[in-house]
Image (cartoon, rainbow, N blue to C red; front, side):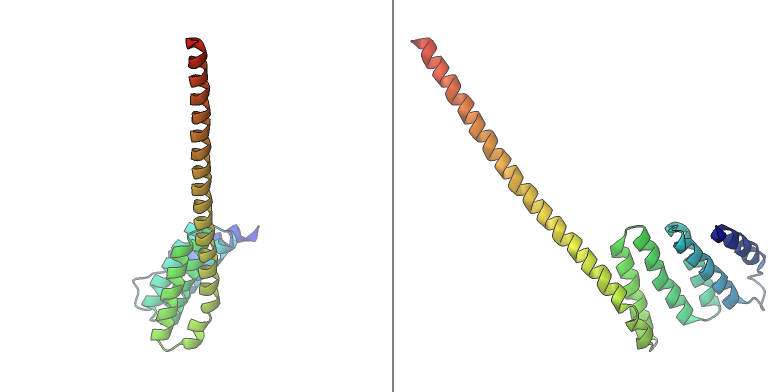
Length: 168
């Protein structure tokens, strides 16, 4: 629908920006890339979203806008969630949390706690489930090995009985 048109509208604006000029409005450029990232996020286009967040971070640094830089860093975690890379996502949120705290913004840091906790619990559940699956797989293999040994023993006994009969 409207997202591709919006992205097409942003592209020329970003491309025309003279990033070398001393009067370049890096803050606005940062916002353009952050908005493009949000559009890609809404379309679940993780790689595009991550790329645009990186661009936004670059211009946030050039604009000396530390809080926007950290915000964009934290938002990249969403892209890694889309890519089903929860460990990377968790590490990015954790780093954004640390950076907010470093700059005295405990309020913004605390806003990341729920997302971090959710990721941690989801990962822990996956790890627990995987451990259970491995344990069950091992148990089934042991059972199967035992059944195979029993069948081999039965076959051996049958062969022995047949050989005994042939000798008579």
